[in-house]
Image (tube, rainbow, N blue to C red):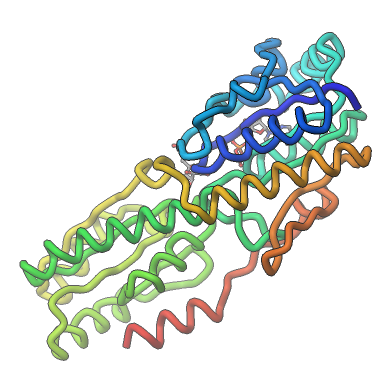
Length: 320
Ligand code: ADP
Ligand code: F6P
């Protein structure tokens, strides 16, 4: 192995830069040439590729976003687009690729591996929706961003005796809502993995009020209800308590990565190079019980993410 490339793909997440830095610096340390592929798989199709050196990744470990930029590239999914990418890989003499992205990007990485390119997948997504790993890069930062928002909303909300719905991201995964809900002391957590009853949510608000609670926090994962504004109205009508909806949106995708995400990204990036040096391919990097692990990327993609019932149940008990 002489030359490798690194790319970020799909939705960005805080810590992607720390991962790029680790891949580049570890690669150079072990004598590899490292190139950065811009805009995810699109850069592979277009040949948007630049040589990376140690300085290219200076001063980025603390920055959100991705210096390589990212994209969602439909063309890469087509046979023609994939062939173009393989051609570019050949022209540039790239033997190995580190793909930093979510489950969609892992499908692209799996295809590259099957086509004979040594490929490593690093889980870069705020959603924490990959079952094979305890945590994905960016999730911890996103949860902390939500916690910061909960704190601010609580301040104003307790001045007005209001109830609040805070809508968070996660695609089809409720982990951001679940973890931020427990850590932020939310009264109710509404997630896609479980049915919810609006009457139960209202009961919690009213019970809280009768016990002297100044405000209520309801964490709502995106996509569970069709219209969060209607939910806001319905809760207000049923409880008689003024209810405000805050949709946090892309604020959750940015910001300086937490120490946890920087460490996770650095450790996974270093491990990816170690595996490439051992001539391994088609591996997904993860973390289990504070150990960096790697597993077959097809197996990793196929694993079904399950709800952490223990956390949900604890959040329910602690909010009564
Ligand atoms: P994420 O990686 O965050 O889950 P997406 O699902 O949007 O984001 O996927 C990112 C990119 O990965 C897509 O735009 C596409 O370029 C590539 N990709 C996704 N699915 C496949 C697939 N089945 N085959 C090849 N490439 C894929
Ligand atoms: O996958 C990360 C994520 O932020 C999801 O939580 C969210 O549903 C989606 O991406 C938003 O995508 P976009 O940035 O394209 O609006």
